[in-house]
Amino acid sequence: MMNNHNPYQPAPFVKLKHPEWSKNATIYQINTRQFTQDGTFIAAEKHLPRLKELGVDILWLMPIHEIGQKYRKGTLGSPYSVKNYYGVNPEFGNLSDLKHFVATAHRLGLYVILDWVANHTAWDNNLVNEHPDWYTRDWKGDFHPTPWWDWQDIIDLNYQNAELRKYMTEAMKYWVKEVNIDGYRCDVAGFVPTDFWENVRKELDAIKPVFMLAEWENRDLHAEAFDMTYAWSWYDAVRKITQGQAHVNSLYVYYSWNEKAFPADGMRMLFVSNHDKNAWEGTEFEQFGDGLKTVIALSVISEGMPLIYNGQEAGNPTRLPFFEKDSIDWKEHPIADLYKNLFILKKECTALWNGEWGARMTNVPNNKTAQVFSFIRQNDHDKVFAVFNFSAETQNVNFHESLCHGTYIDFVSKTSVEVDNNFQSILQPWGYQILISKR
Image (cartoon, rainbow, N blue to C red; front, side, top):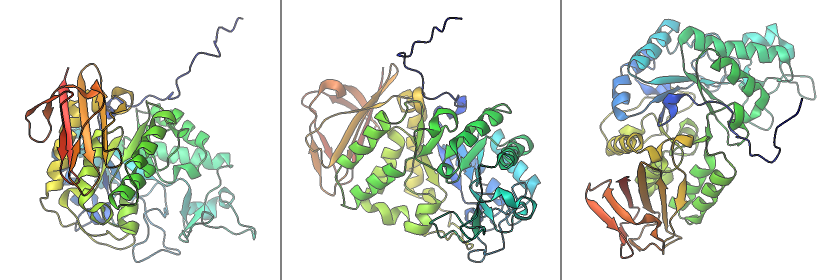
């Protein structure tokens, strides 16, 4: 039989199929323990209509499993120290409560993904006694935490074991079948072999179309395993810029890698906070200061899916502890309105959609390249011209090319703006201008 394959013909890198509902989705992280005073699924469920109104689509629940007791950190322990992959943490409620939460979310048009910890377990997980050969050993022959980390409350699993792979796959399928969840956020995904995740994706998709988020930043995970990976390097770039440690060219580096090294049909998660950053490094107010709203706007307008960590929309000013109980002081805050309006824009403008549903960014050169970041995203339906002042000074910005020319509506003022050779954008310190054109 003749092989008609042309070795010079480009092959698509992303071979998985994203669920249709992810095309213009946004994501929201729920730290169940801290989300409400009660810290339960029942209490969290009461917030679902508010989250729907906010404009989020995917709800990521931090690990819902029972937490190990042995070598536990703090009073309540880390949610990432899993004692039983088939059990629910009684601190949060029971299986029926979780099912009710997911069903209510679905009725509202929301989707729920669970945080999954495949790399390691608690020391007192049932697998330790039942299958001790499923764990790696140190040079002394003892169980050990993930090498080089201070994760003393967990021990490492060994993915060279086929039976472990089968067990973990079946456990992940259980929650899709039993609770009807819509996918997973996978903890330290790069510490687990990619071929394991690729097989998991196939078996989960055979049940229903799922959405998979990897806590990792790697191109290869996008091919057949994950819809989205973390954009840690984006966070680092905007943090350094707002703290005066770098210029806008740090963003050029990120977006160059994003365009050339990552597939257009892959999604990157952009965020100004999450449970790790908030607990260990500082709140978004500490990290971004006066530049916070500018960074939030960029996280929604640029390529990528924006994340809200619970409490951001209430202006939560505190670091939520990792191993103890705390709660968010829920109140109205301008950041909620900012996110809500940006999410409306993201959904309405197809150029801002995710993956190949949306448009790539094109740099628009300006006369303040060290302070001002400007770009276009456009397709046959929409055109968005965005300019961000990443400095503490007012900037009068001119643009060198005709790509940005046209008639727009200003996102903030709702007034008509004509962009031509004479156009100048006057941006206040840490200000931005987003212009929208329907084509």
